[in-house]
Length: 464
Image (cartoon, rainbow, N blue to C red; front, side, top):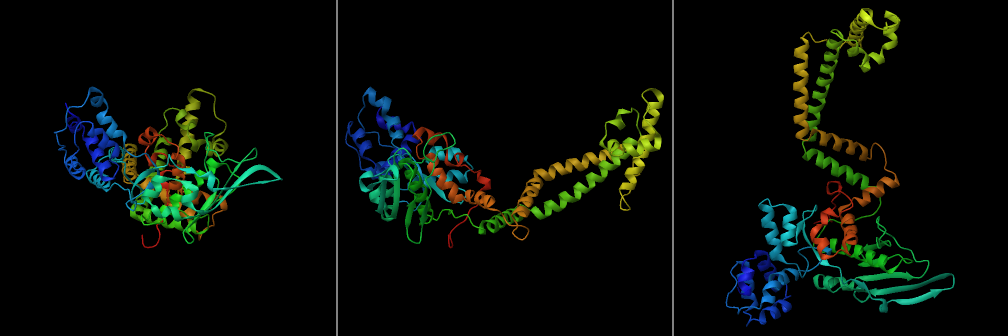
């Protein structure tokens, strides 16, 4: 079996071979195949591999080649980190088109990710990841300084990001990123601060910002290099969101977030047929409440065992009234049962009166009331399956976010800020920046978010 035949038996390896030619990353592959003969025109190999029809005039490989051939091709795929889209210079659009086609066919999201390296995010944008493994701060570009009152050594940088951060894969994808105005700093020494992840590992964030107006990234000083690098990547993701790809953007902790969330909840509520489902659910709840009362009244008028009365909440609610009218409860025997039956009838009378003028006791038999109650509960279950319970929860969120009813405090606004899709995505870059290729493949981006996708607020820039 020659190498081409080996690849022909592995469709995924064929596609990855084509992808690497398409992305001008063919050097290693070409050298591998040149060991066995002349490589045909790369464009032709790409076209044929996409069609699953690789040329078969490649000489027989060695046994070692047969063992490593397809695996080596598959392992030449890029790693991941920063989230990128179709605006990237290195975006594999063939893979994106394949992902779109698989999505149209109803293929599982995880399977699409496994096969293409692309996924459709909550903002409706198709995305892939850029390798962050080579991202390092260039210490030689930083100005070193010390202060007598601080035992740390401070490293400070002012200039273009391309000189401060080594990140070849990002700059290939987004060359303009090299020109971002960067104001970065980090410390080395005994009092250096680090923000850690919940598991105790470093880094999480040193605090920073990205200004699209000035095209500037700023990080806070006083933190260690790992935290500053993490923050820089976080802010780089914001720069990509603000660029040609037009991803969901981040934001700031501000009162406007409360109105934005109310708008989101109101939109989802209307889209989910919330008003009608809520009306139907409320009407049914009222019917079930009345039927439950009718059912209990019937049961209290037909007591056969004293525990049917004494195990009810209604009895304990009115126990003093019942004992004042009927006297103390007998200990046992026929008097005990008779007392329970008399108390049951008296309790049924009380409950009818509690219903008010609008309450009409059912004239139907016990069996008919129970049948109607079962049917009403079954109908309520069907409404919940249609989304009634979900819409009730959403309505509660609307009321909580309604700025005309109350104003959110700072803690609530900060929680809303964290749920901005652009902020969650930028934090996800930090979460995944030190992942191995195996970890990234096993855990797609939406599984490592620190906020559930259905709670994210998608805010797009004007015109996007």
